[in-house]
Image 1 (cartoon, rainbow, N blue to C red):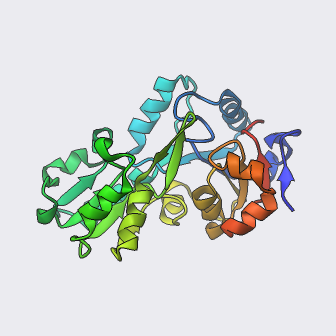
Image 2: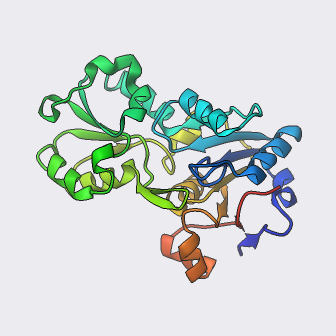
Image 3: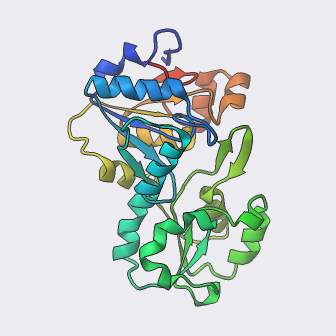
Length: 271
């Protein structure tokens, strides 16, 4: 049974949990502005000494995401952020040390490889692997471009630092790195993913131990599926990326179609 928390709020169940994994984009903000009820929820969690991690599939290290949140107006000291980019960095610096890479993604993601930017190769033919953080700005709506670009390079591994397929920036839907990675997989290329729903991002961001854990997010493929894989409870924010599907389908049917288990729903995160 899925419990709706819209009336009673997160406070109804918050004290049943020790640790909260909370998505950023789609929960704390929509890409353009903060969700102040979610920020207020963080304040309550902090006041009640509840442990939480702002866990995001952002393809950049932790610090640039913290700076972005502050730029959006997040004044409070809610800096327990962990990104898929941060999880990927350890692997890139150890397993792929001194290997040349071809980067697929916008310039704003360059922070990810600033410490080894000298290994960035502008000619994909000369690269040892492909690092995908997103889409090129000039080809951010055309997945066919990537089919053509990648079809002759299937022997190279792709490292995807954001498994999300899409994201909503305000009311505008955009492709994410996960969509490019799916193109590569459909061509029979090998992709190594970092971020939700894959276990390493949870293991690296907090010590779970015997803690009772709740994952909060708006994406069934990443936030909720990731919770299921880890055997954590899950709260789906229904006003996020699946809002149109949810308005057209019963939530139980939608969960079944995505093959996920949802414990709670809330239109937006509120205490």
